[in-house]
Length: 148
Image (cartoon, rainbow, N blue to C red; front, top):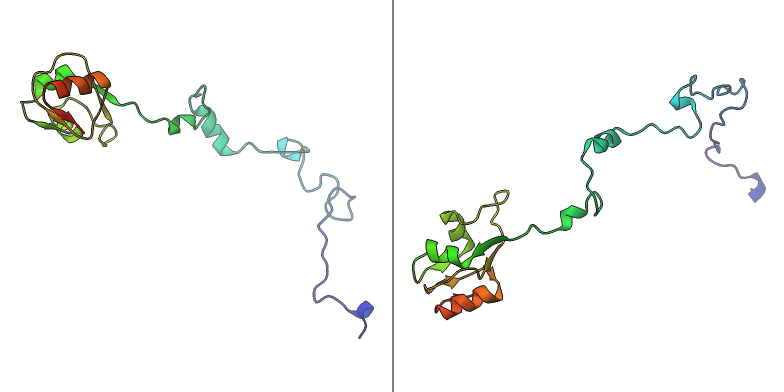
């Protein structure tokens, strides 16, 4: 046995060459039929998903998926609302605000809430798990409450 006498187990098979006369079996229209978008060079059928995408409204400015990364804004609540809705000594949480109807759930989830310092506060209140502006924090602490 010599190297130049070795043969492959399976034969090399080249790809079918199209558009090379009628004897090859793929001549003339090269298996594309006649005319139309599919028969042309560089033919690309527009995918169905593109048709669906075209029907969506155009989002400007951040790309189609850019808005998914933006965090939903916090629900804003003023100190004056706490004055009206709670008794002295209450501990305020997001769940309690939802229960009392001061904030609303978003897609069935608890919203982010931020307290702002508009209005006056005379009651001692403990705020937990809610962010507060500097002025709101100052007013709550002046009334004897705490923000955690």
